[in-house]
View 1: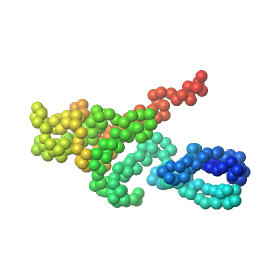
View 2 (view 1 turned 90 degrees about the vertical axis):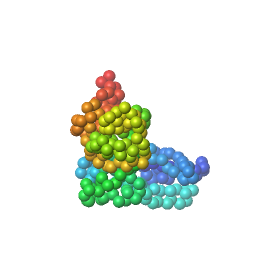
View 3 (view 1 turned 180 degrees about the vertical axis):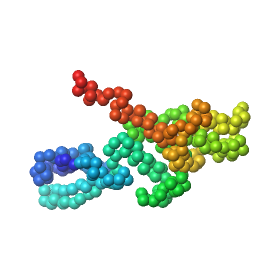
View 4 (view 1 turned 90 degrees about the horizontal axis):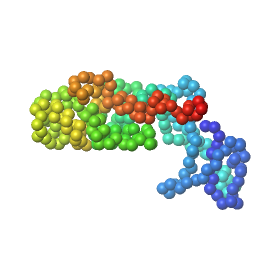
Length: 273
């Protein structure tokens, strides 16, 4: 971090330049702020600079910012101490961002007990990951706001978009079922069996997935979201080269226009002008 931030809230007679003189010229000033009964200091330009890729450890490495604090009390006492920020992760490139999200997204959806049961980086996660499931009601909300969480100006997915994502998620499960299993699966997914003019149970379930929400209590495995390949909803047969997680991430990249592949950056336009 370059520079210092001087936070002050005092009467005029107590204002002083002691700390600014002590820390040099590169000092920015801001005021204290009360939030929920707590006196807070806001750091507007707090960041981390990595000198090289060597500084960056494993993708799962947690980082923290050390803040040196000096409290000036009525020009009589200066109290110094050190504060560490909450731990955070760093992704440098877009590819690393995808891997990072892949690493942290599912554990964040689990409840606390399941989260603490997550295997460590050294453990084999293959056999364990599929056992820990998330209710569709929770995953549905996370998917609904997935784009908006990364782009403030974006909106949440509307009902039709969410139904399409729902069908992409559950259709591979439906496709494996025979006619008898389709009835059981329909009850499991929707809580009832609907009489419609469709003899094929798989097609019937696909139609319901595209038009009705699955009950919130249905459990979804990590493999269904992040591992299993999507099936084409056009012909109901073709296995696509991507899973739902990859599709959602790529779609979000297009919306955000990462790297300005579709629209040139305004700064580049200004330079050309």
